[in-house]
Length: 472
Ligand code: NAD
Image (cartoon, rainbow, N blue to C red; front, side, top):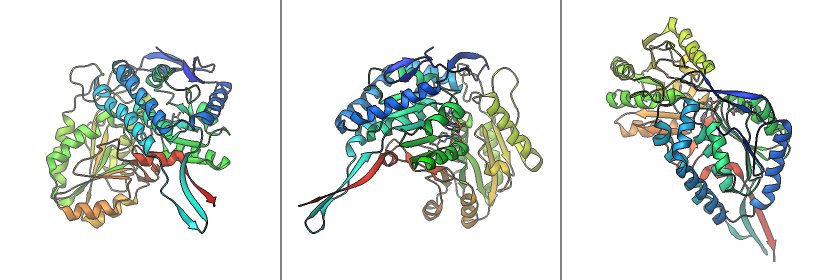
């Protein structure tokens, strides 16, 4: 297994502590990957700093060519990368290959096109005898920090947009799921100019923290938990740096009396338990209007009760383990604390046997202000609570700390329009949930972050608007 890091165009073994990488389906160690030393972190940031001087001048067409080549390389190695991703996160085979890889590849292809759309909005005379131009230029070397839930997809989001914008990168995948990203690093060694992309391995508290505080880093881009987002903002404030955050979520699924109940229940089965529920946009908080509440609980419980849980290669497995023992115990803690005040309609237990399995779980009759209704569980758990009318639903949904994904389920167009205009979430779907498109922003509001990934708007985090004025 490839365990080296990419620093200044070379594959190097980390000189720090060797961190164990576990197979979540068995709990067994599949590799030990040494993390970067402070000297190696410095070498990577120096490389990104030096490479920026030439990479920022590379034409958009050439940047597009590089991004398309990355997409080709991933496509040529799709089986191997999917295998590594499955081993790292424990997802059922072939979900990584069939559901995630197409968007990963498309992210690079879309950003190849987006690189060629970066332009300012004016050239004109705003003072007599002077012509002004607006430019959008890359900000400089970026520290890109990714989480463990979709390691390669998050790496794609954290690499493609900065490269399209003309920035160089030092990237760090999660210390518990680095193996597909480190293999991608090796595959890209000869694709990109030296130092343009550097990939390190290590813990957040050591490698991540050193990286985001390095004086050569001009932008910090994090996908992760709110705690890491706060650490990034603190680091950015020390040096006045750009910061882009995609953090946690707690997506409300607002189901009105006229909704298609079967469609809601099916979406919950396939959407909420995909990736064992470890998804920042997971449709996890069902808010159901009083008139159909009991029917929705029954339909959701019926669908979720049928989910087949198993190891990645087991026959018909729809859902695998969660990523680690820590995550499984965290999920169990949320459900256990909810037991006394809510009803566990399905699941609610750690599965026996090796690996980090937790049963697909439905918790009904949850108060809207209960911990499990308001905090991100990030596991195979959904809750159901009630609302009376659209004002009540809006008030409850908008009161939470998060503002990432949301959905509205109704046949009434005016309800859909009014709700979607007033929900304070970066993304709102109507009669569906979580469907991504490379052209559309994965956008955050409130405690879920700043800015977005995907779409041309992702480039904003990595570019500065500049004014150039010529006297004549
Ligand atoms: P995490 O914050 O624990 O770790 C994310 C990354 O940050 C890891 O690489 C980690 O090593 C690093 N890190 C941790 N502390 C750091 C520090 N002080 N300085 C620098 N780096 C540090 O998150 P996680 O547990 O890996 O991922 C789960 C979280 O990610 C959830 O909250 C989930 O909602 C969120 N997430 C958000 C999105 C989105 O698009 N909004 C997508 C996926 C995951």
